[in-house]
Image 1 (tube, rainbow, N blue to C red):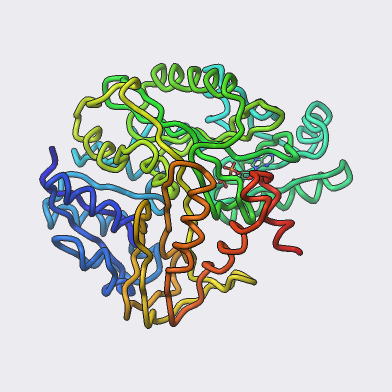
Image 2: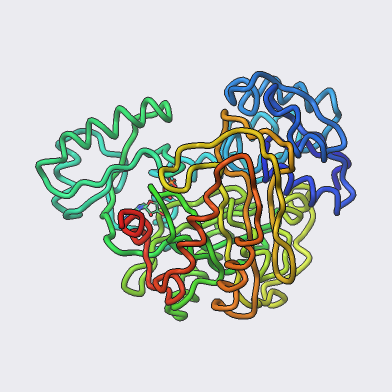
Length: 445
Ligand code: ADP
């Protein structure tokens, strides 16, 4: 096992990874930007090293500086967390070439799944059902028109290299095709440096259901069940839960079987998430994330498995120490993402946290990077913490979330806590009457 791991990330996920390393007896190195010198992850790690200026391009994405930090500190492995370099196959490949372990999949899998067109191709071959769409990239406007005749409207044009809910355009009718084509291509180029696009049928009322899988280096593949992440704003998740409620169990078992077989076939390693849309009792693949997800704690709560520890062990060459039959699913877990934002207009709210008091009690987990006196800086994502609850039933979990949100105190900055209180108090949420469009229409009321 590794003696020292460098965490190439910040915020709550860096704190989360340090916690697992400590429990495994592994020393940790925190990297940080100039702006993050007072961050929680820097305080918690055994060592820390500044890798550049506040802008993430100069620090958390600065590969030469991160490699230098690894060499100076003698770290043997790097955990990339989520975002930043976690899905950068070139970074993973550089580490492979320099004998530094990347705590994640092999670079070839990051590359295939990072390009949504090649991901659709390989997933299609494995038999996992896809959202109907183009066979490959869209080469021209006339190519898009031809595809739209087969797919029908509404459709969604997506950037092959897209992520974070960006680079997607819904087209309702034929007359809007040309504008949408030009817009998605130029946005894809500007945001992702790659203007390749493809097109899919736009499902009108699906739920977002995703499957957590895990594989060691020896083709032992297991699944840790599913999560419902349908509560979204602008295609980004706000609340997640596990297991999904009211899902056709036969279809679910069928899809899981195909996913496991597919992951064995491609010799996948590490944690992965197969994201799917679920409509009319059928699942459709949209993308695979080859990293730890923000919402992984809900799965940990119902399975008791520390996914980050498993990632570290798998990257260190350890065999999975359990089999599918050893995994049991207990109760229900819900996660609310707490952002430093105005809860009405979502404008970021950086600044000094004057008071921080996290909730506690039975079945409550807080993954956060806050402390009283901490200054939330304006340069990065506004996620400052996640509140996760676990209870025997979904309704009990909702009640536990209500009282935990009420206990959470963050003074000095604005947070999205009050919005979560509103959402989970609706009958739509408690009756599980929502899909990926529900939150947007709730916010308009
Ligand atoms: P990203 O990589 O940016 O997260 P995804 O492909 O995972 O993009 O999609 C994010 C969200 O966008 C989905 O959870 C869903 O809400 C919506 N979405 C994506 N594809 C479709 C589709 N074909 N039909 C309807 N909604 C979609």
